[in-house]
Length: 183
Length: 88
Image (cartoon, rainbow over all chains, first blue to last red; front, side, top):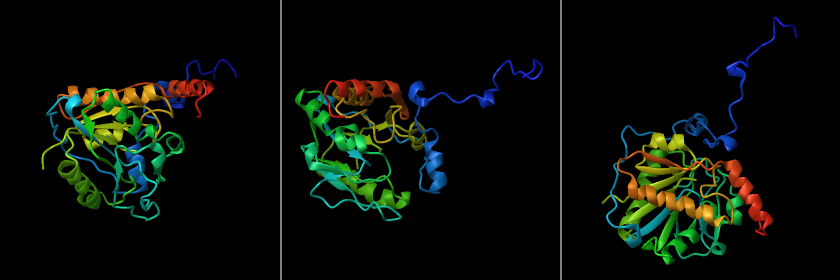
């Protein structure tokens, strides 16, 4: 290399972005667009913010429900259909007093090898049980809710899974607060 | 139907922003690892407590609390736990 063609500074366009594992940024940047490109119309946007429902009582007196798309269910329950091209528009109730040994994960769309070893990695049921015992939470609803995140028809999903879980959470479970875990 | 206060724990900040959720905690970790790594009880608990704090303190919809603990550090802690005898 001669003095004339030496590049004194790196071309910014050629500089690799920082490793998100070290930088503390989202590991899979642009996930919404990546999924929507592969499955057009499967992702949702909203024009307006969902209204903020205020807490009506302190958490130490509140009953919490956990709702997740992680696909956790009792081993005794029929798994959700992870092979159907449009997804499974059903859900499972998971008793909030269940032990990890009673549960399994049936889901293809995220890596769950670590969660298979300790379900609390994606569905922290034991940590929530402990927070009730120590008094941070008032209690847990009798059931938590789980479904699979792969559903190719957002409108149908809202009419079925989301509507039915929301009704069960309010009417049957009488939850005061909801913890959402979109896996 | 009455509104129930919600908080979401997300690894995809962009998706959460576009969904315009009321309250969320973002962790920069892989999908399926919203509460960290296996058997790291303190970390799992910390994410939950951040979520609860967000439930209590958010004053407007669209609040996203960033819990920036680098994944590289979380993995290092997982290796330490493993060395201490946890089955990882």
